[in-house]
Length: 207
Image 1 (cartoon, rainbow, N blue to C red):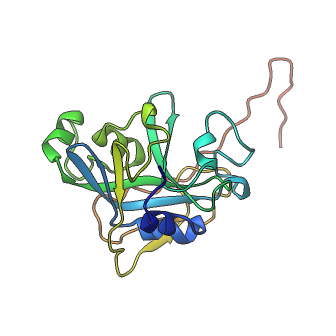
Image 2: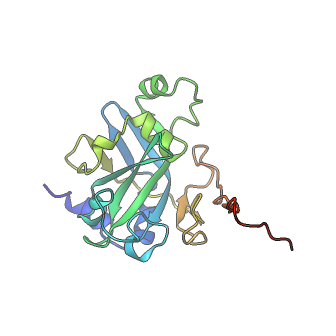
């Protein structure tokens, strides 16, 4: 099945234009729902920060499909993060669902994150997936008809934009969008610089 016309139309445009329109959209899995307050746009083959920048792989296959499906991936060897596939089919665009406020099923979300404050239940992409019990097995889920749904809302009257979090590829693109004043918006952190250590047989240099 394809996504509903309204959702398909919303997600079918350029990712950096579509992304802020997902602010206030509600992502639901079972009894838990999260209202999105922060998202990031990734432009596939045209974006060094995207998982699809170097082309199609088994990992990113879903990103090349039609908009309106969920792309899930594993990061840091322990966390799942989720994107809504966006942009014209074949361009591999995605919108990272970075943070939100739990608006339904808060007790169940708290049981999944028992040491978290209400503000932090879905504050960050891994926490959001944890609160909603989104797993790698949900990769490819149709966000209209599947187990996990995305219901567009009315975007806030204004939003703010800035660099995406923790990226080395295209770090300065202002493609992170958030609703100002929302406590659930995550903190910005730039990418850490990798320090190259000399090989054992390589002499260290001095300035």
